[in-house]
Image (cartoon, rainbow, N blue to C red; front, side, top):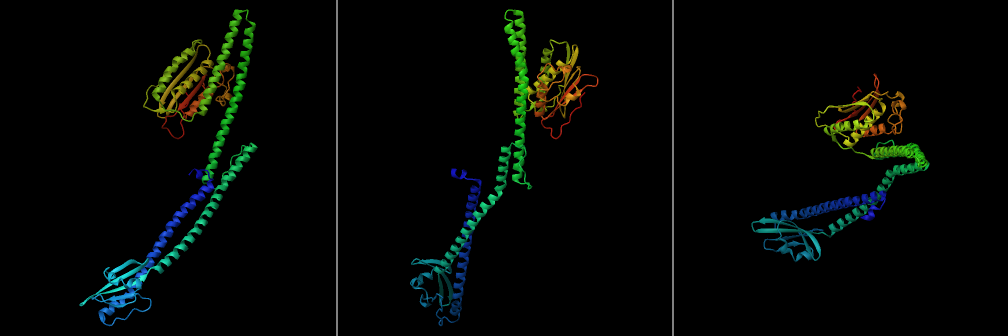
Length: 463
């Protein structure tokens, strides 16, 4: 059947329809022929019974005066002494008359000299013994009638099958015409570079659903391509500066070959530039992996609490070179809820928010992180006593490679920290809220719903 798979949809549907039609028409033809044959046999039996009935009356009334059969009636009467009183049976059956009377009352089919006969035997009991009336009919005429009916049915079925195949071809062609138009439209849009969607027909049928799905897929591909293009553009821009700086620092190091102290200082600066490039590359890979991911594992609340506790130790290591007070508060009660975020990603969220806060706070500042749970979800908040964030920047804070001005540490990061946080939380069906505190400082609140939560998410107001 490999050849069948290589045929077009139009041919496959037409051939399949013709095969199914042929099977159904064959069954219908056979059933109709069988019914016609049964009707014809029933009619022959009735004729034979009608032809033999008058002889039953004559035998009962006056057996000595039985009239011979007339016309095309083939009837024989045999008395109790097996003497044939009257008979006009065909020659082929006349010699078998004595054996026919032993067949018993009823109808019988016999074959004699390659000819088929329908035989009716009827017994008439009398005081002198049993009389037998035998009526026969040659089945050749019935066979001819059935053969003619079969021929007519076969020719009719053939024409019906041809019409069915033609109708299937035309209907399939008409059904696939919108697909051809959609393909032509897609080729036109591709050739012209247009961003218009594929046309969706007025009928809400399978083709309209296909067009909607393809449009969604095209939009997704275009959005992905746009994100990749934007990322490449932004990454090229962001990488240009540290690479150029690294080149200058290495050139300075060459000029300082005779001065060990200056050479060491230049190499340390070059190492810082390499670290910055490494962090940038790592963040870009993280964002790329988040964009490509489609499923997130379910993690228990207890595991996330343990990760939050571990993050407190890392935060204090981050703040070794800065006099900052760091506080971690956690609600360690859990009722077995799970969340659509991995422990690794949750750790990235905490570390990014803590590092942002540490860059923002001044000496002797404060950073406070809290983790809470309730039936609506998991809530992580990070507060700092820094200068806050410009209100006009909050709306674009999650865009990649965007950084606030110097008042909130805009000279330290790559502009990808909050973008990574937003990507992770969005993948977990959660939300991130940024807000300046009325009393000064800044707050980031992350909300992650449990895996069983459905419908719109509720966000706990920031403290």
